[in-house]
Length: 379
Image (cartoon, rainbow, N blue to C red; front, side, top):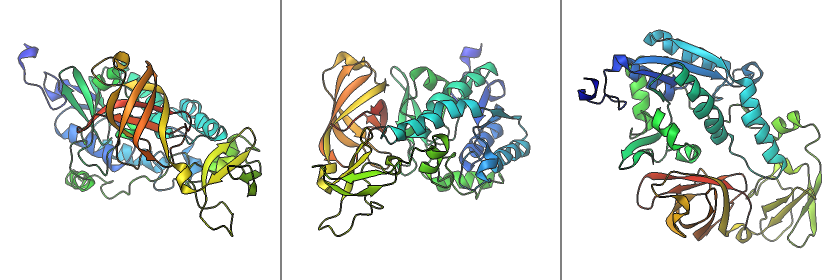
């Protein structure tokens, strides 16, 4: 009987050849290694690459994860490893679900994280449903994060390599999605190990550089994308201090983020100034001393909870949080206000906490991800 068989490497009690897995292939080395690894193990692999925007407009720039050359690279890996590969046009979905919200967030004075929305609304939603339509048993990606089985089912854990960990960008993964997803690279000690595997499989992308930019902003000019979608968004206004004193002028709030120091164009002052808030209603950039950036209480909405107990069952939850992707987890107290909202108290105040960023929760002294939510304002 099937149930008497040992579990294969993807956690199913059947031979790899009878286990269909859809691999989300970006054309980069990570997802290519995942596909090659599973194909070599004998799984029924189907590679899928999403065309998320007009890659011709990006001039096939290296380092942008969705450019035309990446689709070509994914197709070539599939051909070399002898498994089927499909390119799906998700351009309209991506524009509506990710790019437009990105622009609207900047227009409202927030600092968005579009890669989280892409995972949440495109890859782990529409693509995942496509995988199920293809009768797949699971979907695998090249993300650096771990899925472990705990007492209550599948758990999300940080990657073994802290330098590559992508848990900040995957906090909104739901329990149902986690049941279906697999992350074969999360346990690897370093990215060098991934490249060694790529070389072992003879993949043409073994030495391909990592993507550095948001795929639809290949030149790093966020404001340019926003102004293209919303002409006139870069309206000039005043740069003021906390008392409202005009210190200079700006060329549009969309050019500034909380914590920014460079590019303010204010000279002759005794101490450096930083952007401490953005007043969109009055079209003002408010600046102040570095000390003014520190905050202790962070309001969080749209929470996705991955803990074992019901979120609102406790008044206080001691854990660690990340308020920016580049920072390590810091000790905090999470106070639930509703099933999807909470107040986070940082035991040590942090600088540069910005609306639109994610606040991701981690179990103290553990690699487990307990979910997260969206920072809505500076408190």
